[in-house]
Image (cartoon, rainbow, N blue to C red; front, side, top):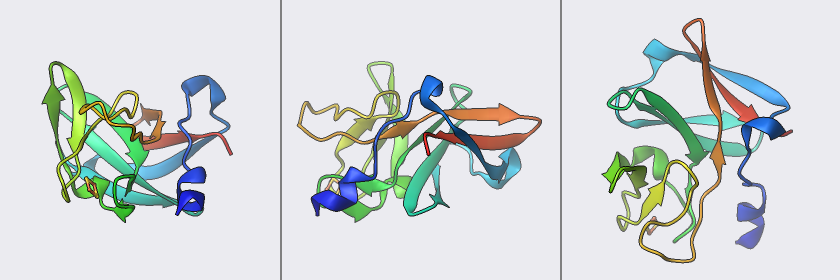
Length: 125
Ligand code: FES
């Protein structure tokens, strides 16, 4: 299963080579997730209107390797925006992908930018 995880590596804004357009703001539900595909990756995108921010992470939950994170509930834990996996409710930070329960599980995060009503996710390839 490790090989599935290998393709998911966090990307910082400085590392972006491609801003991939995923559509209009209006196409994305508010305060929940949606799933898009980039090459072979499934990416979860979250339109967090409560804080006015967007986040993108791998859709794959590293706990049991389920492609489900876009279906998770978003919220915050002590001020950290997070997604709870719908399967076993493990919480991941939307900012750095760390597991907020302190477990050795991490998800990749990607920068999101909004321009002229369009949503873009930054990838390093
Ligand atoms: S599969 Fe996500 S918490 Fe178990």
